[in-house]
Length: 418
Image (cartoon, rainbow, N blue to C red; front, top):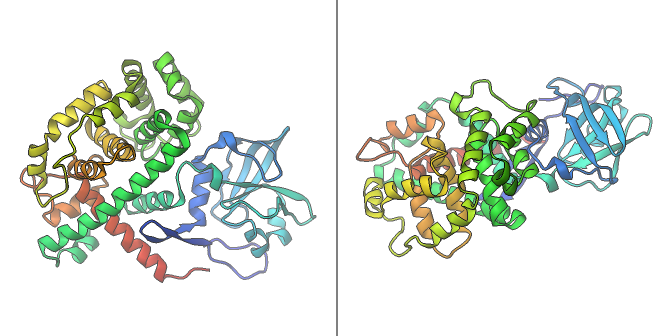
């Protein structure tokens, strides 16, 4: 809980409650702070409410105690180089509601960052000075529901599996599978909707480009990868290859997260893989679209068949090999390739045709990809995954994540909000 530093009563962190595709969800102020810190928005289009272009030299040091949310940020506001503090709120009106205008601890604030566009173009300091306001909502790489879902997944990643096992193990096998399938379908619809938003904003070629780099950066380096995708569109990678990979790596050198990252996921490795991929297959988005158009749709639906049966019947192993070599030239492999297919290729392709049910079925039974350890532990303990007879698949994994997200959301809705 963040408290004010004056004599006013302490306040609980603000949380916005909104309606999503599958029901209400929460968007906490702390998540907006993380988005500012990571730069998980299109900073190239950042303009204050009064029309000044914002260049973010450094977002500041995250302050989890009293006072402004970020200290010692370095910015260029219009023609002026500025150093000072940043305060983050969901609504610009929270500045007054939290009594910051009368609090000397906020005298050093040089930029008020908010989620929703403000009514007034300035916030006011103690001396009546004008504090510029920057709204992030128009700049976000994803919609709010996707950010909120990713935040919960990240929070769940290191939790023990025991609680979920206790709650789900009393269900009969058929009932458990039906539950997981329902939540998997919800996750699929969300991913297709997110892909459609990206496609409408960027067009097919750049939507593919941004999705690929973002997935190669998951989960620690998604934001820097997205900034790189925005600065250097796909044609630049086609022309420059590995040289561009090294330049992009250097450009984000202060933003990379490498602690705890496996060597295979190091941003240098991932950027060079993408450089090799785009040099070998410069037209890979067009190839992907043509590849999908040639896939059979008739009879490819999610039935009661097991994953092993579906994979044999519809040749998923050969399909995976064709995608890996024909689209990616073998540059991306392992579980990250499966994430690329399930989080990138299938949702994007589902927006382009009428056979979404076929793409959903392939997505469901595809190899699981990178998963939080507790997801695998839970599904094995529940005997949803049992090895060769019932191999790990993306759909049941996403179904469990969807169930966990729904449970967390329900707990949040029943909690206190101020």
